[in-house]
Amino acid sequence: AQTVTQSQPEMSVQEAETVTLSCTYDTSENNYYLFWYKQPPSRQMILVIRQEAYKQQNATENRFSVNFQKAAKSFSLKISDSQLGDTAMYFCAFRRNAGGTSYGKLTFGQGTILTVHP
Amino acid sequence: DVKVTQSSRYLVKRTGEKVFLECVQDMDHENMFWYRQDPGLGLRLIYFSYDVKMKEKGDIPEGYSVSREKKERFSLILESASTNQTSMYLCASSPTKSLYEQYFGPGTRLTVT
Image (cartoon, rainbow over all chains, first blue to last red; front, side):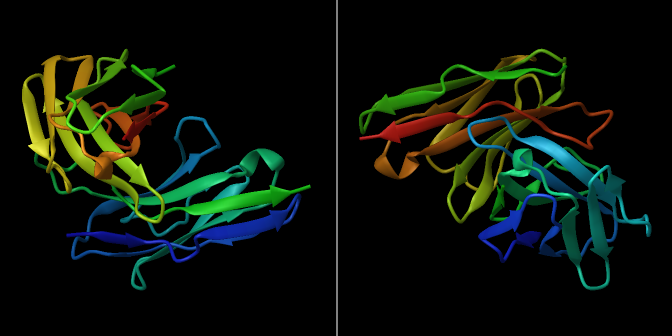
């Protein structure tokens, strides 16, 4: 079974600064996907960024980038030029890619509440 | 835009009541999921369905059942609600051909008194 751990329950950052959210995971799989999801206050959860484990290059989406360290099983999210709209709970998630009916399942971490201060 | 809707944003029920949470998606997705979200625990999968009338247990199925009679609708049933089922319930869907992303509904905050 996979486990995902987010060790930072809460983080805060000043507007326009950079913040990094941590995530570690444990799996015996070699082929999988990792995701960061964002859940703004009272709004729906949306995908921020994804990383395929077979790709060495770190994924980036505008101000969001990841630091994927496969050997260390670490997957951190860096938010550059933080904006007030980045205030949300962020979840790290794991999905295996081995086929079968259950391979669409996501395993989530505990979440990190990020507050961006003006 | 993919749209996943849930029947209620807030729900208050009494212990022992039978509770139905409904989820509808409009993008013809094969896969649908029910999670509960609790502080400090993240999202935990209750049940999922990969086709009409097909279902599989997730990590915490005890006390819950599901129904998927139509492709667009996935219902979560609490046969006899208990106070420890007070939680936020999130529904999600994803297409089989591209399992990169799950699309989430707004959630139902259920309180069992």
